[in-house]
Length: 442
Ligand SMILES: [Cu+2]
Image 1 (cartoon, rainbow, N blue to C red):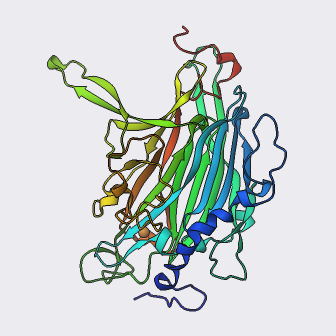
Image 2 (image 1 turned 135 degrees about the vertical axis):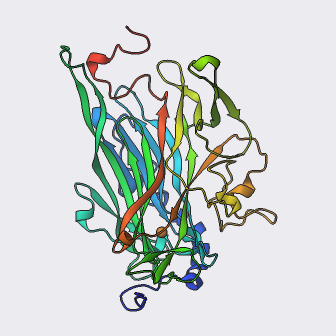
Image 3 (image 1 turned 60 degrees about the horizontal axis):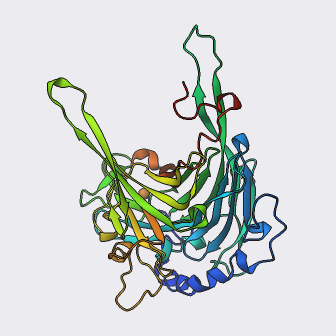
């Protein structure tokens, strides 16, 4: 077995016994150590309203076409990084458009295929305490912020230079050009994104939690897993692993990483509603092209939703409209997911629950929500009307290890996007020459 001793410079791979108790104490105090408890906000730069955090907890970035993203951050003892008051202000908008009140990871659930180990990395395995110090080279062109880690492993050194805010090339934001021989201009833009991330070590894994913000209002939320496959989870005996190393002797046990995000939308700073879209295909006789009809269904009560090839959801502002008179919304666009059906809370792709302060983690929720309340998101879907919807997004990755996972393991990503839908009347990056191309202009 290639197992290395977890002693010495490496932390023991799991510290269940010691850590399980610590975060319980932190759920309440984490809020108190957040930015609201810090120094008074600085004078804001017009026209943005005063942020509810001091400069050290503020991230502001101007991107392509003059788009500005603004947010506050704080760090909690279980969730790790939390982004607050996330707003988007494309050129031409007089004020920032608030998008998210709070956004954070809500669990990384890791069950092994052999039915042995099963971890809740956020609320059971010290994800937040595993915040890694970043080398400046890991945050090129950016700023590494100092994070005070509640319940730090080393109480004498709770401050970790572990939050990177930088920009990264996006590639084409758009392209539009003529056919060969036509005399017309080619419009193209190489975009860049605001990238905010932390690296959190849990056992043998390191999770890179990325939050990308693009000039056109798109957000990309993803978690990348790297580090190394757990040397303690090699099992040659039961056929539930993949052979690593020479021949067929050492089998790394297959397992899942089920990542949940919790999104407290605050589009336009007011109550939001949820809509589901389904498209149905009709096959027609005679080889004619099939037709598709799309229906929109208001989601008025709590929902455990299953994605489909032609199903999606959006969160809609009840007050704000763009300059075309269309209500502003953000669409949830899941990336690839390997849905883990083994637990009730991983059985659905998206959950919408009515806001309840004690409901913070998709599984192994630590707060006491009452005597008969469940500990996972599925149990909170019980028919309440949605007045203040919280969106929970579940993206799974079934990890069947491969030889290339040694070593270090290449980063494997899972995540989703939040895509603006009618937030602005046109592409906010439209070049001036095309500004009249709104609707049927030809
Ligand atoms: Cu894995």
